[in-house]
Length: 286
Image (cartoon, rainbow, N blue to C red):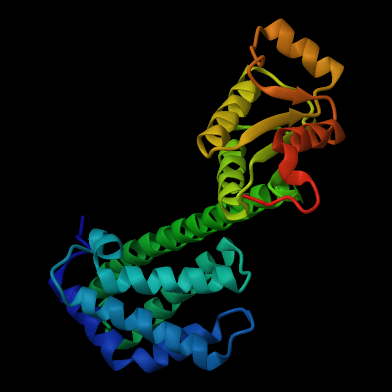
C-alpha cells in the first residue's frame, strides 16, 4: 500500500498551497454558509489555516501527527471552531466546512499534476490530514460547549443562593431546591464573604424551600454552620417543617447544638435576641 507521507506528495501539496493560496481561500470561503461574517473575514480565516498547513507539510512531522502536534495548525483549527461556535453554528456546520476544504484541495491537486499515481497519493494524504482536522474541530466545539454549560450552571447556583441582609449584623440565605455538594460550596462561599463584608454576627439559613433533608443534606448544613462559627458568627436554621423534623429524627442526625426555628420570622426574632442591646435605637454598634 502506498504511504501518505511520501516526500514528493508533500512537496507538491506544499507548493500548491503556496502558489494557489489566494485562489484556494476564495474557493473555500465561497462554499461557506452565511453565519453573519463577511467574505473577507472568511477568506482571512481560510488563508490562516492554509498557510499553517503549508508550513506543516513542508516540515518533517508525520501527517498523522500534524493536527495534534503542529502548533500553528492546531491554533488555526481551534480558532476556526471557536469562532463558528460563538456565531451560533452547529458542530455539523464546522465539519461540513472541513469537508468543503477537502473538496477544494482535491480539485486543486488535479490542476497541479497529470500524474494519476501522484494524485492518488495526494488524495490519501489530504483525506488523512483533514479527517483529523474535522475531529479536532468537533472536540474543540464540545469542550467549548461544556465550558459554557459549567459557567452557566455556576451562575445559576449563585443566583439561586442569594445572601440577604435582613438587619444590621443579620444575614439570611433562603434556600430553594436540592442542596448538593456543589451548591453547598457556593452557599458557604457567598455567606462567609457576606459575613466578612457586613460584619454580621448572626446568619440565618432558611430551608423552607428545600423539599427533603437526608443525611447528605444534613451533613452539608452542619459544614456550613461550622464554617459560619469559625467566622465568629452564630448560625440559625429556619424552616424546619414537621415532616423534616421527623425525617431528621428517624435518621438519627443530631442538630441539638444548632439553633433551629420553624419559620424565618421566628429565626429573625431569635437573631434579635442573640444580638441583645446592640439592636436598640441609639445603641453603639460594634
